[in-house]
Image (cartoon, rainbow, N blue to C red; front, top):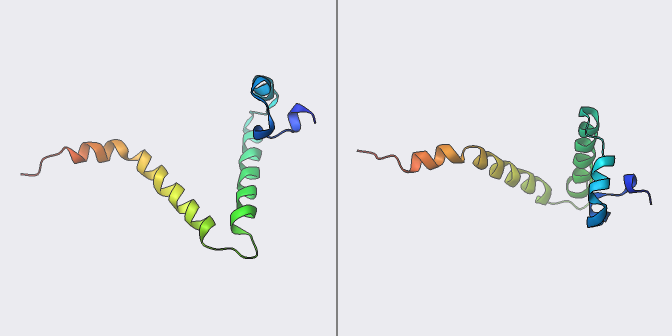
Amino acid sequence: GPLLERRLMDVRLGELPLWLVTCDFSPQGLLGGVQKAWSSYYNKYINVKRGGPAGISMLLAGYCLLSYGWSYQHIKRHRWRKYH
């Protein structure tokens, strides 16, 4: 199919620069991409007939890792502080 309609995982390495040029990087295009990714995640892991806690736990684990990454510098400085 056309290069614009292909997903990232279907693009060959040589076609990657041309595929990136055809992508829409406007705020509206980025918002549409985020909405498409969220609906794909939601339909695959959360909105299923025999769902379990996997989708929610993956989301919470991602949040924990992201918040730890944001506060890592503060935690690192706090670790070397002496308590006398």
